[in-house]
Structure formats: structure tokens, C-alpha cells
Image (cartoon, rainbow, N blue to C red; front, side, top):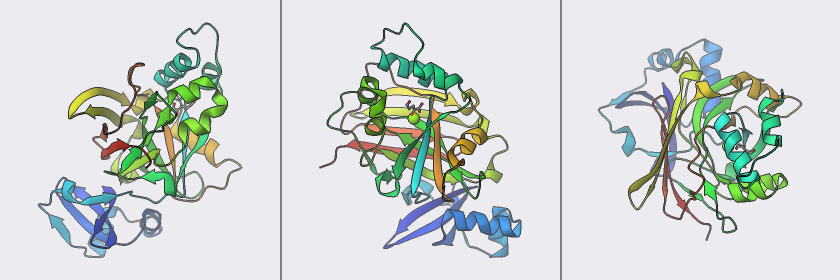
Length: 291
Ligand code: DO4
Ligand code: MG
């Protein structure tokens, strides 16, 4: 069962996708309130639909809905160097490919404390079919397809989504102190298209992600990853994020990338980024620049 939000005339409506071609409208409720309602009443999403006798819209093309971000997270945080593939990519960009000593990326990969950084705020975060931006002062930019966790009270993981941690490899590679500029700018983060409820998956490590990049309608890149390749546990990442912090329910934590395009690849205006997972759906965004 997945939670979505879509535009209908001037309103944004929340809904549950119950199967391929069926959804149930929930009104204007936000995800955290909806999740807490289920939890308080010990309902599954199906119990909720039955109890409230909600109308099932069936034989619908779900892709025709005008989807928006499934959650308006005040903050999106991200973890980094949580997959071997990411460690190798950072080492390459930080050493011009001439790696000859242990780097801080090697150290953080093995250290008890993970890398966690502030990735985005509500204003900077876009949803499905919106545009993500590339920066004018970078020549080496990539999408980072990542599993996103929706955090509830305390350390509870209350849902799963997809995220794109747009990144500038040259800016980060030049100096690690430039990380905020390599990671945070207008429209540099996309999340969506849906939130998978925890009841919808027994083992989140079985989630698989694919990312494709299209230019002029042609597929330029395709890569796959499985959350089972994650070096750390999801709970461990959440624990470090909330520790001594003030994290609002509904905060999203991206869990790091395991899909990195080839080193000679950089995004261009009008590229299309398609991140998908069988469990969560497809997050599509076109690439533009701030005008
Ligand atoms: O160290 C920089 C960020 C790494 C990152 O964003 C990732 O591994 O996904
Ligand atoms: Mg990342």
C-alpha cells in the first residue's frame, strides 16, 4: 500500500494506491497524521478504508494523476558513503583518479559514526515530474538515486520513498569543505513519487532501485542497486540523525547512493532522470537551470 498526493483543480488530495489501477482518496490529510491515526487505532490501511467506507476508484491509470511530493518535509537529511560504490566514486573525484593513500572517505565508510548532512528544505525539494536544477558553476553533476526513510516520533521509520540527491562531483572533489555547495541549491533534491507504508514490505533491504538517464529521448545510462548492499543498518542511520538533534516527524533521511554514472558523465539541461523501484514507483524529473 502506497500513499500519494495529487493535484485536482486547486486542491492537493492525499490517496492510497491499493493496487496497479485502484486508489482511494483520503482528503487533505498529511502522511504523518495518517500514519499516526493507523497506529493509534492499530489499523492496517485496509482496515482504515473499510472502517471509513472509502470509495475505491478502480480501472484508473494511476500515471495520469498529477502527482506532487508525497510529504512536505521541513528538512531532508542524507547519509553518505554508505555503499562501496559511493566510496570508490568519492575517492576518484577527490584524488583525480590517482588514489594512493587512505582518504577520509575510506575512514567514514568503516567508522562507527556515519556521514550525515543536511540535504534540503521544503522550498528546495521537488516532487515527481518537477524539474531538478543543475548549477552553473559545476561541470560534473550527477543524480544520486537513494532510498528515503520517512521518520516519525523518536527513531521510528514510518515509510519509504525514493530520493535524488543531486550532486556536483567537481565541487566536492576540490575540497570536502565545499560539501554544502556540492549538495544544496535550488531544486537540488527530488522525492517521491509515493510513500510505501511499512506494512507494505517485510524486508526493506530487499528494495531494489534502478536509475536511467535519457538525453534526446535516448537512454544514456542505466544502473541498478539493492538496499541489501548497504554497509549500515537503516535504524543505525536514523539513530545517528536524531541523536542530540531536534528532528520533526515527517523528516526524510536519504540513505546514500549505490548507483553512480561513469566518471566521464555529467548531466545536461533537458536530460530526464528516472529513478524507480518495484515497491515504491517511479520518480521522473527533467533537468533545468535556475532562470
Ligand atoms: O561524501 C559525500 C556525500 C556522499 C553521498 O551523498 C552518498 O554516498 O550518497
Ligand atoms: Mg548521496
